[in-house]
Image (cartoon, rainbow, N blue to C red; front, side, top):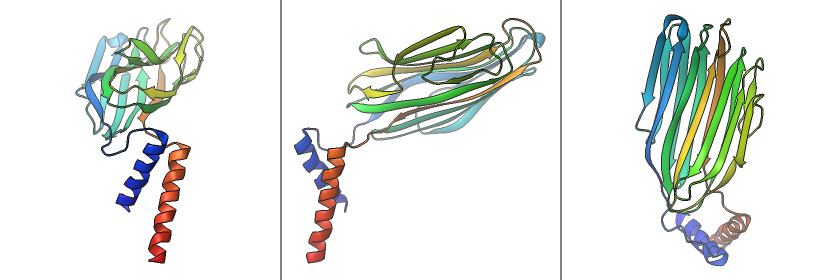
Length: 243
């Protein structure tokens, strides 16, 4: 069955004018560091935990605690050939004293050796008030251009909620590119994000925030390729039945 599948893929490649899948392309994570930070200004408490290196596979978490502030991020990263999945889940609390915050931020650098589709999804939700800030981008380092760039910043909306790719900030919003696109083979990329909230105006009763971020690199065969694969499989079944 595997040899039949490969023959169908190669036939589709000849018809569609793309490279045959003799060897799958690779996603290479070259560098990166992620930081989880908590700050309670009332007790002058500060804590930061670091995840580095960030080479998949990764299934772990980092948690920082300082006074009544706490920040935790769960990481689930995997790559296999030309398929990659990078998942972040955020759970944060901050003290009520002014300037206290919870935060996660960091960078990951990677490259691909052939054109591959990517997609983003994510959210960030505040229970409380004052500042909440979501910032994510995918920078093509080779061309020095953003493939995707989204920033949402609110300073006074109670129980604010952001969806990645939106423009929900009451103070500032930036949107460049779209949540899905194509990575260019041979190029290096920087993937950055910052999820942060803070009592920046005055002391209050404290607040919490939860969020998530998913970055996927998952090739999807085109309709014509799927059709040719289907014809090849049906033909192979009929041939075996006649035999």
